[in-house]
Length: 331
Figure (cartoon, rainbow, N blue to C red):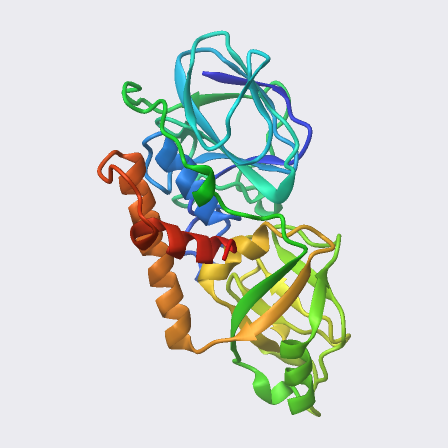
């Protein structure tokens, strides 16, 4: 139902990821920025975990071979048949229409959601591409994708107000972490360095992990190596050179470097959207605080979904604004 006319950068199908297979060595994968991806799906009336297109920096050019309701999420210029349209709004495309998505002005990842979701072969329960293990592949020019069935009436014209859109244009981001589990592999000075220094995201970063440059984190006499242990998205490993590596959505399931901390789930999307060169400042929080922030993010997303579904006729600072803006880094 859609044909890829031009694919200038990494473009993959992603959903919420594959769960239940980490014990077999299979990463979760899925949306790098789950917050924006879920809103993109809500804009076209999909469940938040529906498969969509995720692009890195530059978006594709797409031809519609049937009527489709779509939405683009990201700080990006969008055109339909050469006419500028808005991101964060759903539109009805007719057969033969051409969608052009430009280069992100801020952030790293953008999303294109289609009403009904993208039809694909589910591998281990997910459509998410993980090319390292031949679970899906990057899309290329000429590929054709089918879209799931959906009643299109009422799905077009949904709109996320500018005030509520994520802000990924900052030169420095604060990322909250829970310390541990391998703190005995670090000196007190090393832990202080980790929490009190600004680190820079390097160009070697990708969906697997974000490598950071900055002051070296000092290990204790136990050193950097541990008996191979579990990794999750957000795990912060520190190899022998003292430079932290934050595991992201395509992270391997185990690793042999000591882990100094874990980025809280509520901040992973913000970190994922930070470009190489962005400064990262870590802030310690408790497990209870991390859980509270996750619940707040989920409550905010539920409120946004209700607003886009027309169940919440007007948003308020209490219902949406301040919580969303706090999460999105706007206050």
